[in-house]
Amino acid sequence: MKSTDFIVARNDLQQCKIAETQLPDAAVLPDDALLIKIDRFAFTANNITYAVLGDQLKYWQLFPAPENFGSIPVWGFGEVIASRHPGIATGERLFGYFPMATHLVIEAADVSKRWLRDAAAHRQGVSPVYNAYARVSGDPAFAGRQGDYQALLRPLFMLSFLVDDFLSVNEFFGAHSVLLSSASSKTAFGLAHLLHTLRKDIRVIGLTSAANSDFVRSLGCYDDVVTYDRVTSLPSDQSVALVDMAGNSELRAKLHRHFGDRMKYSGLIGLTHRSSSPDEPELPGAKPTWFFAPDQIRKRAKEWGPGGVDARFGVAWSGFAPMLDRWLKVVEGRGPDGVKQVYLDTLNGRVPPDQGHILSLAK
Ligand SMILES: NC(=O)c1ccc[n+]([C@@H]2O[C@H](COP(=O)([O-])OP(=O)(O)OC[C@H]3O[C@@H](n4cnc5c(N)ncnc54)[C@H](OP(=O)(O)O)[C@@H]3O)[C@@H](O)[C@H]2O)c1
Image 1 (cartoon, helix red, strand yellow):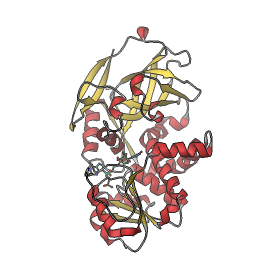
Image 2 (spheres, protein in one colour):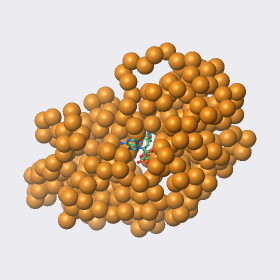
Image 3 (cartoon, helix red, strand yellow):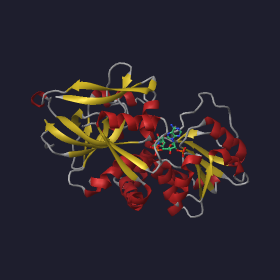
Image 4 (cartoon, helix red, strand yellow):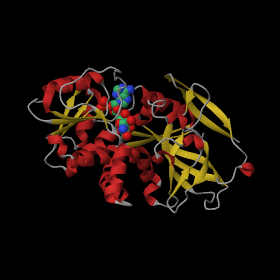
């Protein structure tokens, strides 16, 4: 049996192709190995960022590909179709990090009631969240449309949740408004939703492109929506915190220069615009710094104790998930051509923000 893999050229993301990998026979799988059929996975701009940072953050290392090519990690669901682990039965459904492929072999370890881990040597050296699989058979929160929302948004909303917590613990660094770039992105509107519902005295301002401004306005979780060409029309006498999903150096410089010392916090989160310059000049106001989610999780896990992060995240998710029926249309794509189309559309910024793509490489 072979796995069908969708791979991209590491130094030119516009180039992509299908490759086939021979899978081991179920009868000769090593001890504790699982052969997983990957059923469906989500694809958003976040996955493009994994590719952009593939070397720097070791994402390419997770799912090996032929030389000069990479397999982009995606969040999705798989079914165990052969198991050499005594605690895992065939037919089990897993949620986690997969390659864009039809199959994956993992080495199951640390198996508990809810989780297991891939102990494959090449997957170590990255944050443990990328090697953990949730055992979700029969869990209605991970089935059907709710499952699609989990694949599309759970990893993004974790970031939204952590940034909301970080800003509020730090009393918004004295700012009265939060500016979110790429306000139409799922990560941004998750954060806007939390700020809007939980932090009533903070103004939430979405910065977006003209084409996406109607969508951002329609969400109802931004107090104000400003297109990129009009950001200097914002009153510069108010203190602001910037949460930057776009990673656009020119936009960031314009905002820092406009607000000067009133730019109280400048957090780098994403790279949707893929136009960040390697040598950015010193800017007025707070120094731009990467927000590193694993650090914030570790800090809160220590302070909140076992299960504390999950319990609080669960409460936040249960307030957010019901909004998605209104905010998002799930669009399904199948087979190599369907996957290629969504990949190139996402890479080139052609996906309308109200769409959430769920893909499968199976024909
Ligand atoms: N640091 C972390 O741990 C972490 C965690 C989660 C997400 N993130 C990052 O947050 C960002 C948003 O991810 P997402 O999955 O939520 O995005 P998404 O929902 O797919 O966002 C799509 C939006 O991004 C902008 N965009 C996308 N591709 C573009 C292109 N080629 N050219 C110009 N604009 C483009 C557009 O917004 P506008 O028109 O509004 O600009 C578009 O509506 C990603 O960079 C992701 O990696 C980081």
